[in-house]
Image (cartoon, rainbow, N blue to C red; front, side, top):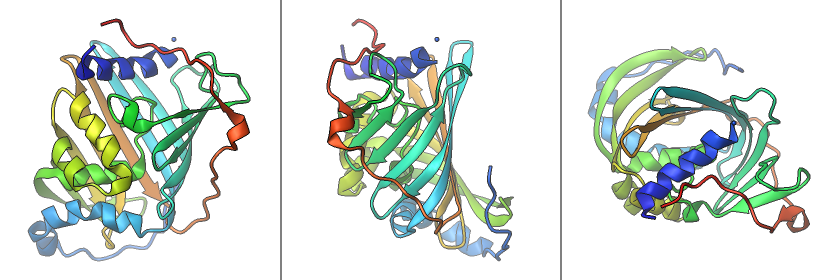
Length: 268
């Protein structure tokens, strides 16, 4: 099975798995000429700004489009950017299924209530770099820092004006990012994931829309990923409540399941 087929299979794992809080009302002035002139630098530097941002709350949404089918997966949680560590409760479209708890860390993804043969009281650990899409979409959430790192590969960008987002004026940029270029520019903690994605996606160019606040922090970023000819995933990450406490730790080793995990990968 080649990596592009495997990437479609990673998407199938999510498809098979499914068989608001505002920010400060503070309004700031944004210099539109400066935003236009520095669009590329602002977008490329968003990951560095976010890495220094401390903590924030997180909302995620992932829309899967395959043929005539559309499914939406949502999540809410918090992220500690300095530690590259976050926890998100992921809700599948199937209302009868318990939310999946995901702990995202540098080089590891832990999931609880994952199903697929994993005991309910156990976590399962996955190496994101070993997934054919670098875990950008395979498990329903795009790591907020990795989403920002992908913007380092910006190949084209245009300033799209300002707007109000959760009571604050932000700058909006639209463009495309090259996954391979992003992998080459990424910080060490995200490089392996983006390397995997560069090999797994059928298209290197990833359309994006990103909203940056006055400090250059990502407030919302949306990427559109394409698998094969019919599968598309639109992933949105929203960040708010910067500076709020985020309590998250890695699961104890004794609570991590090491047995066989069922998958939904198609046959080659």
